[in-house]
Image (cartoon, rainbow, N blue to C red):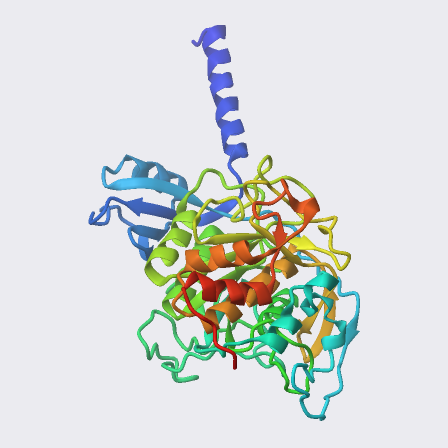
Length: 447
């Protein structure tokens, strides 16, 4: 018979175990992230399905998650085992202050202007003295022409690939609808991108990346809506293609493996810039997402542009991810308003937030050939990604880190931002183009 002390000890241990279990953040019930020692063989554990994500990092599907988690931790060739954590359920705002169906403008293009009928509503593209990003000034005064078309991946709620105003990336190596992985990249019929939220029987991401919300389509228009087509709005970047990757559910509860796979897919398929207008308030100590960002920076020269978040908080004190990672090829963006100050909702951080960009009342594309206003650092991030893409199209030899440095060095200083973000400044396209030429030691010719 157990003594009272033994019973109390057993009860205490049970309670501690239950508390520990309760403290584990929500995660996939059947998927883990495992990193192996360099060159190690896969552990011989029955029932596991392994999929290489990048380098020595794998996603592992299991029917006995807790047991396999513990067994993998004991394997000598395993560096770490992580749960595949969710973000925090927080329905993405789809509050659109104004919804428009814009009539086509059939007039010609006057030099130095845009004929897109929605441009007059895009305050963020006006010149710096009006608290925008000097996009109009950059096009009026530019002295170089784009050399390369830049692919920007939008890892988000998907993209309306049939929108009249969006330049959608196409995988030219894939034959539509034949249900074959023609280019041997591991995905079937990935014509315009992938959907990591819906997987086939083999666990592969599928190809239906259409926007089930509106968030991803709005983000895409800010980056690269087609200029001077007489329709809709103006994107910041002229020579760009949008690769839509549906990874963020409408409740923004994305999984780490899905985010990693989206990053790797984008990089391997030619994206030089990835926009991430999402985030979560916890990380659980996992490093796989951060390591994936490093991997695509070093191996594919990709700049990852990330929204700082909308909680009006200092992320140096209260981290949010991926914004609070410290990767050299990660650019974290706060939001500004049309009055020039930081948006009331924007996160900030003297060490953790790099730069600011317009994010309040941003007019852009939404599904079904419509247009509307949204606000958030989700809007500031793609405005910055658009500036990055335009600069890179002129100076494609820039590395991801150099591109980040150009944007930060050339940004317009704002007194109220000093001590709140690293650069203390708002992104500026005209200045960034000038700075990029100087950084490469070029004498930029007049054209």
